Length: 194
Image (cartoon, rainbow, N blue to C red; front, top):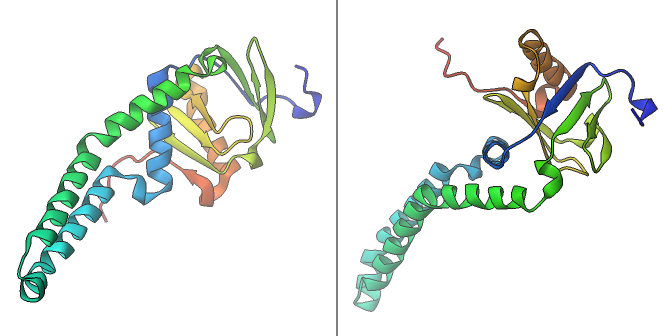
């Protein structure tokens, strides 16, 4: 290992991320870190704007003698809401897949050493040391953990499937302890009752 200050790795992963995995992780990060990233929230906002336009229809009829303008805006907001709910997530997923395919380094097999203070990425082309403090958030979902905000990699996907079965829970605990409560977002496991 070229980076002697990294220390001994606590966990070592060897992985190759696919475009679908990268896009899925990026969407999960976007939606977990900002409630406005959820398509349903955007559609509801458009629906509220349409309702506001419809509430202005009687005023428009009284003042201008026509209701066409508020009705037109209401229909436009409803159509935009449907597009944001149904089509935009698919387009965003494909855009993220294209971004991944445009970077050949991301497609390579990567050896990732997770140390106490940093993570070391090694591919055939590069070797990068990134301190945990450079990442702004860690979002766990399904079979991966996505680290957001690094200087060299804006999104780092760590596949838990590349770890032995007995280390996966310890890896999640390590990430939770490393990022703390303010920037660690665990996998949602359903609603708890009580």
